[in-house]
Image (cartoon, rainbow, N blue to C red; front, side, top):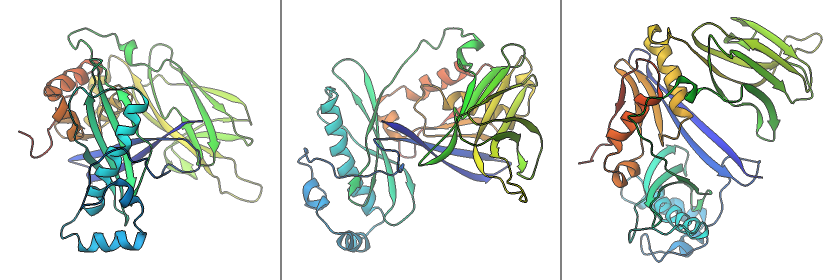
Length: 349
């Protein structure tokens, strides 16, 4: 079964300036790890340092580290990864019968997890002969690749007036689940209205009871919610405009105060008073709206001047009006006063 993993890196630069949340999805074919790398089947003739894909995948770990040390500049694993992940992207395009309308495409590096070798993410955008544009996301580690995710980009009429119901969560049930990767809440984000359909159901699929509670010290949270029995359900009603951060925790065993974290999430409650909220609170709600939309963002943060949305360079290179369009689209789907800032990557004309 295919499972999506969301890797979230939060970089708190300054509470008074902005906080940027970086997010990438990796589509895996197993549940054992979000870093499930493999060898790619060579189909491209392109080379890096005079070696092709097959030859690089036969290089030992020690040899790779020697190349890294002697490369002469930072970025050996990024440049090698670009070759390998592009090969995997070409392979997946072929398997999904997507034909590139152009002779070639460029791959752009994204987030890097600074281990050695690093985990490196990449993106590309391909315009297909079917008239659609496709976003390709993948990652590498050393001389191996992760699975490539292909998403057809969607575009809408940004002049159309949308009802607030457009962005509300259609299913207001949150499931607490656990597998080999640990416990988590699905979905993480819930967007509801304060004056209508404002009850959220928590479904416990675990074999132990769990308690829903608020932020703060786990031993003394700012609020306690219901306790759900194994395979049970409980509900809570939210009628105050703003953001509720919640957690699911196990109950302490007799003679102990310790509890285990079993997931959590964020509930955004909208009303006609949302625009009156402080900027940081409005930013969290707008962040959740964009995060769960079709907009192909790679980072989001709230600054003193509004909501900042970051994109991989691939989006701007293949979609000349990306800045104008995605600014308008973000303003369309965020139903309250929140300035949107999109800045093109350094080096773009």
